Image (cartoon, rainbow, N blue to C red):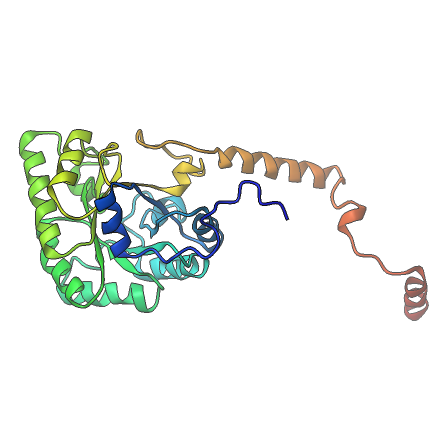
Length: 292
């Protein structure tokens, strides 16, 4: 078997942990993170050597077709988390806590976070918000569940924010973001996603807190980067955020493959001889005698 283009990280890679994240920040090594929602994607991603996989609530939009992330439920998230956990054995797996799974009460937050580990096969959870979520963060961490924070553009607050808009662009907003980052750091989160914030602010925050930052639309000064895989692969056609680098156009490839299939079936080119199963002439003759 050819080993061309096979990543050296494919075989027997050590399990990535929250400690790995911290060590990477200390060494100045970039952390890589992508989203996944199914077994084959998680398997390919894990073999490629990604540090962490987020089962993101972006599932709502890019897989389930909702207008935003708000409608996706815990049961839907857990269904996809289980599929990802079957495919990825080395990456740090993070389950994204969906809207209203942690906002109502601290008890709800701990219970639902626990479900991601017990029922979803995740290693950690992610939740959005700063000082207003600190009680939930502390309680989840106290229960022994690693928590990833998320500040800046927090999609679950899209209605409150007035749409998918960059955050922290004024001095006062930037100061509040920095304060929230410090609050979350002190509350025990192991890392922090910064989404759609000015690059210089993201870099400044990254240097002011002890935990690794993972940027999405926050520039190169973060300790790592995350993107939605459907954006990376060109699978989500509704819109592409400015901060996305598209590495493939699978939507166009899929469309072509489907059109070629339809054409082959309609023109009788498929199925061809190599695609069918046959009986021997003797068995066919016996069959015809049987049914006469």
